[in-house]
Image (cartoon, rainbow, N blue to C red):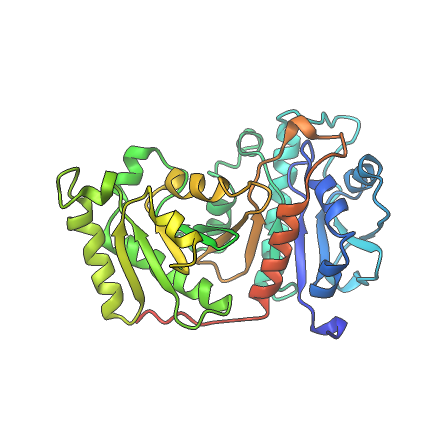
Amino acid sequence: MNTLDKPILAITMGDAAGTGAEIISKAFVEEKLAARCRPLVIGDLQVMQQALGFTDSPLKLRGVQSVSEAKFEEGTLDVLDLDNIDLTKLRLGAVDAMCGQAAYEYVKKATELNLSGEVDGIVTSALNKEAMNKAGHHYDGHTGLLAELCERPGATMMLAAEKLRVSHVSTHVPLVEAIRRVRPERILKVIELTDEAIRRLGVEKPHIAVAGLNPHAGENGLFGDEEITYITPAIEEANRRGFHVSGPYPGDTVFFRANQGEFDATVAMFHDQGHVAAKMLGIWKGVNVTLGLPIIRTSVEHGTNFDMAGTGKSDPRSLIEAVKLASQLAANPVTSSLS
């Protein structure tokens, strides 16, 4: 592939007190990533330089102030340096408002670059919600932040691990609120977003399974009527609109069936229902994808791993998979088929 044909991906550094910089310094040693994309790290150059020392990475760094300055040369990572971390005050493994503010700024800058067309997608390292909130940015995580930056309040997340792709009707809300959000219009919207994402991955007519909310998917109303009242009508409407959707299926079996290849994706009703299924396959294998944005965003599936910060032992596999998936999505634009 010609260098100019490869998408430019903005890679955010995440929380400087965590392992984000270290994971980046490891991931881009892999030759396969250089063949897929042109990476531009959005972060702090000094923190990235420190991370190279922790991991003994052979990479070199080049600080830049704009996308146009990046050269994307083999063996060198271009870093758009926001210079917003004071190394003398940085405490690895600790929740710090300075790091929360910096992590927010990395995501904001990457999003602006993607919305303006200067980059083709963003891949985010983990931020710490508590640190970000201490800095005055009150979001439930990347999904809520990106939804506001892109003015798309209906955005949600999909986790991808091995053959399993799981999107969510709700994510970071109390369980009682998650139950209130199980409504046909929201379920239908998540089906639409899931269908679009899976088609971008090369599946022409995705078969989407929908999980029930209650044990045994309610068992015909014996254990709750949300399936009858809200979920089944959404599935029926989705099929009338041309999607291939089935369910609702019990949450204790549907994800196993999906990972066996019976379905192309599954819609979970709430955060833990989908996350437990995906993370059981291996937290270092999974990728988080934000659906419903006008930009491409993938992310590591794990957190900041404060306990490993500075050890050089962080595992880059989830970031590698996130970069691969973002590169694939950037190469396959698809318009939604929901009418």
